[in-house]
Length: 136
Image (cartoon, rainbow, N blue to C red):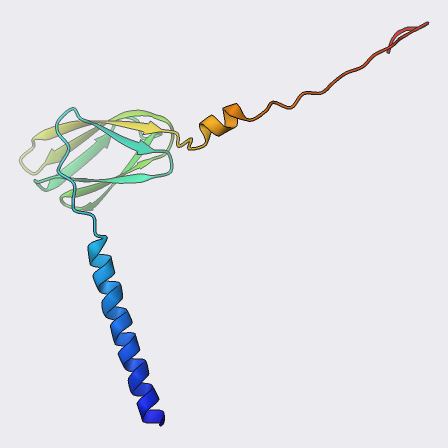
């Protein structure tokens, strides 16, 4: 009886693992094409985007490091993180010395902006009365 239960448990674990792997493969996002020269890359504050390039990179420069932080995760991949709302130029140099300039726009993420402005504004009612000493 004990041997049969362990066999069943192993089979269940096997099928769960196979199902998880196949589900993960179905949700995989294909790699994005490299951005074109002068193209604007949009990123939200506190979020990151991955930029893939074809030639291995040797240098990366951000013109506004207060708004954009960059990190090379491989010779052909750069992660761009939005630090603060603003704009930056991102210059990428490859091994042959060629450069590519990308504009990066960092925006605030305000998903419920409309709800905030349509919410009723709280008001306070003031009452006063006239006495011999004046208004109170």
